[in-house]
Image (cartoon, rainbow, N blue to C red; front, side):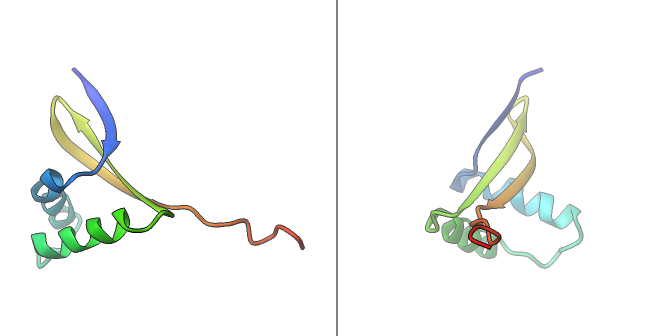
Length: 73
């Protein structure tokens, strides 16, 4: 079994749609996911990763980097 965590890519959109539908959002479109992926890619503070197992996307995560709001307090 091979597993890999990597940056999400456009070719992952159908798999991401399937995951989101499984989580309870049956009306999500591939275009909405494509727009979100494009938004994440255009923001230096956001990252989207997918988890692959045997070359199949099994999960995804979006991370947003935030500055430490307590710094300087």
